[in-house]
Image (cartoon, rainbow, N blue to C red; front, top):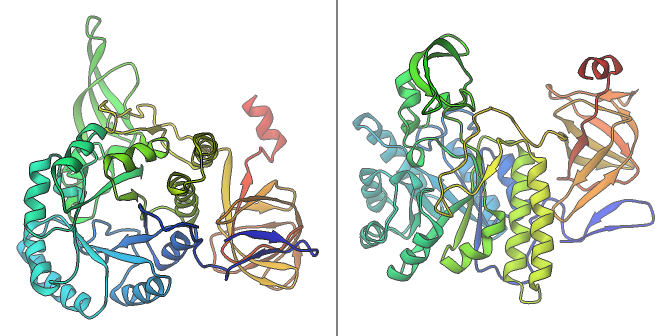
Length: 459
């Protein structure tokens, strides 16, 4: 899919708007994107995903910020298969007895539709999947902690088609697993949030407020800020302090040891492996997975596009090393523009992942402000997420490239001209840019201080 600009300064897609871009050559490696809603799924496909994963709240390790219902799954499967894309349904909780009847009912529903795979970790659930959906591929969730080739053999011999390797597996270990175990697909997380616990099997949320991460209801206490309550004697030899702390809402108290970095003591950096895609392909990974079902459509679009471009550069025979390097550097910059906790390579290179002890967020120079919902003459119909003013410096994100824009006029839902638009409601706006954008484009603005009084205070 390519963009062109005609004589009327209207950007056109050379394929129907909203459809996913296609590689010139059939991909050897799957790009798997998160879908926290039907809308996010459509953006994932439009910006380059080969497949998406999602599940209903009760069984998918995403109870909150999850809008999928069984009827949504029906719509998703129909939409994806028309595009010749794949759908993987997550069923990866660690079930208790009380969950089994509901899971069986859900599997009977899934049996009626043509899903492409089920992601599961619990052996009991895997048995039920084999019983009710014997012809559907089973993907072993990263929650099952497959970290060695004997474990991979075990699951392969039980009928599992794909192993989503634990995040703790290194590149060297991936290579060894791939060589020693044949007849199995290997999937690996390449981008997104890292858990402070072992492959997400955390009990902190359950211990603190009774909401189990292993049943999809993690409240992320690892991301909270904690404050010091009592400082004991400091050890100058070991350079740490023994502390008693509480979280910022005075709910939970515990004893910890603090070093010079501070007290975001559970907070991990985010994973970013865009510079190691070629190594992962060579090691035997056949599916590259992006984390982020709870993230925005902007996040899904930008991250999916970045990895799509790099994967395409790897599999295209005419892309030499210098071209690949240029594309990787360009997409690294795009990922840096997203708000993140700092990036690391996780466990891939055999090192301990970096930790964000300060709680600082990065990538705050641009802000996602809106989605292009349609075209009406010279106007773009916009859904606004964050405030945008007529004088703001903005840029459009499309499946192929970024486009610099100038706002000429803004109109409210009554077509009355205004100077600024705001999110937080269902009303749409009409924007006249210097170029007409295709449906499915996203808008971001460069963050600048809009108030001179604020500027003086910060100085």
